[in-house]
Image 1: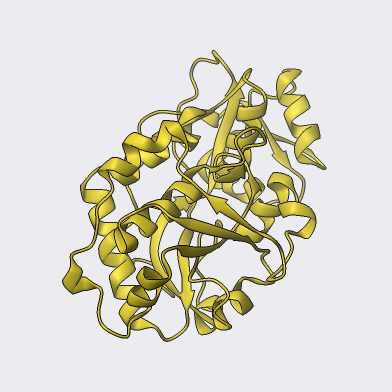
Image 2: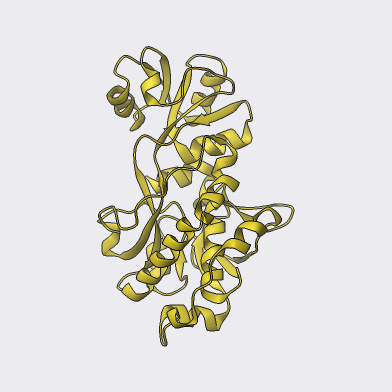
Length: 300
């Protein structure tokens, strides 16, 4: 699912490159300065001798496998050159936890190269809408989940009466043809009338033309659409689950425990919630969602 979402967003840099792709420095954007100032720093005792954490700290930067063109998640600002978004900010915060400063280098990766980049040590971690599955967990380790995406609802801004999936009953609802949205809508709103379109742009156009009152699609794709078109807004939280994990090298249980400890501190301090508000929360209507429970899905 994560691969589909990422490809849907913007093609992941024309199939996103591979380990030979140029690395781009990721620095904190001005709007994220306050967030990163509140991000925790690990105690010296947590940086164990001979550990991955010590290697990263000695190097002086965290190398992240990620995207440069995923709106609201990890996108390079064409003016500043800085990489911005939820995944980007999480990577910077992890770098600060290890190094003391948010020094990150992003290696542009693709869904088909992430396992190799982790396995051969090209990157330390992957932040890239990386859905946790038991099959993938045979090749990489996953900390988290750190975010749960899934199907959400987009409406024209100002639409009243739709706050969640149960409100779709009795209404005309747009979905992509042959997508998981169709059975999901039938399950949560059996009286909804579903109209399908072959592509996301067609579905978005249909929503704007009032050929349906709502459009059901993956939240990250809808959020990207809403960023580009302010006449659209995303309402409520996802009503299906697509858990994103932090990809790590397989077998490095020490580093996995360390990253999970950091993630819990981020959540407890409200920094995770602020990272969401600064990115996805700028176009998704409502409060920050409850972070997913760490280790709560098979493969994590």
